Image 1 (cartoon, each protein chain N blue to C red):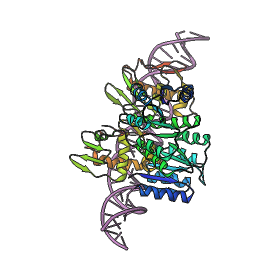
Image 2: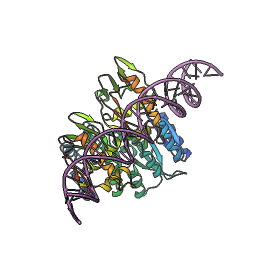
Image 3: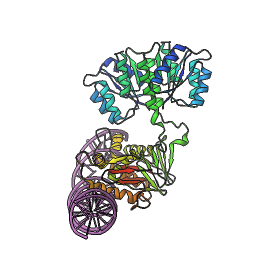
Image 4: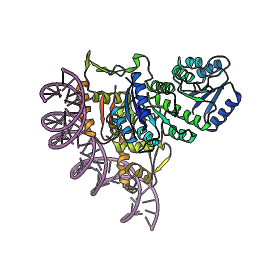
Length: 227
Length: 227
DNA sequence: CGGTCGCGTCAGGGTTCCGTCAAAGTGCGC
DNA sequence: GCGCACTTTGACGGAACCCTGACGCGACCG
């Protein structure tokens, strides 16, 4: 299900959005200020953010920057300001779309659908989403891992970590980036998490967990998934 | 360079767009009807399409569908119609953004940048930033070095040093600059670090480490990386 | 010819980083 | 409110890495 994070300090707007979104079977989180928004974005990992620029605690553009520092989640900006400069600034800071208040709910929902659709993975055939190492297969679309004909059971964190690595298959992923993508932007230094969960992934997927062939450690830099 | 396809039947709008886009070093193709637009999109593979919905030969939404049948290129719709239904229809047909005429050029360009930025890192397959010397290859994006078909393992400092040299490929890099970029601004004189790590790079990458062909020493000045 | 300077090489020691395990803390469903 | 699965912490041994000093060599110069 698609998860939406709504950020606005006007309760009636939040209410209207939440009602309309839930009616269309979106999962909705709501925040009324920038700090809460950033925290929720980190913990809940929404598929799209609807962000009002006029927040009580910080400039909306700062929220955009705070998000763009670690995620590419689509950001749809709401604002009462119509000036061109405001729009340009928000868009160049990393926003994906800009809607001025008052807005039509139909239009907003259509723009939301467009933003979500765009962010969906490119490969529409089922074949593209499956990575095969010979020892095990990872189905990114179905969120399933198969080894020796049997499905491997992964915890949410394990899966999230595996997903980031597989999506960057062959590339080195820095430990800071891994931590921030899996645990959130404030977890840039807890490298012990990585050690623990990497060990679990290897125990579940590698033929010889103490001599990993697919989850390679690059000391001091990060980890790399190799087919 | 980014290539833009502009589709509009009003010559003055096309002219204004073409002038503004070219001034910002975009490459621009223009079409004045839907059929031409589809043909140009197929032959020229634009990075983004700016599409007016009011075309003489066919409905703009049909153009969107025609494009979406085979490409995910960002489509930015221009239209004189303000009704919500029109916007929803275009967006749900596959458009990425919808701007109503008259529009501000700054805003349009910002939305264009946003659309292009979003689509850019889509091609994350085998990286493009690969430098090949014949003896070994350096993949800057994946942080990977390959020699004789096997991956070479580099320590963080080794990699960092290599990266600075490769990014200045063919140019002389002063030892002070190297030291400061790799070890930090306060390390301007510890040239022995350079000697040690340069030796390690050569041992790992050069065919004959004592007679380096790619990591050239310029006595008294610095080092140079040569393809 | 002796001295100096810059560079390449090598190996040891201190330090950081990683894998592993176990236990405590947390949240969720029954 | 209890049990279970998952996550978070802490500690420890071992491996990898970075720094350091010493030595040899060749170039250059007095």
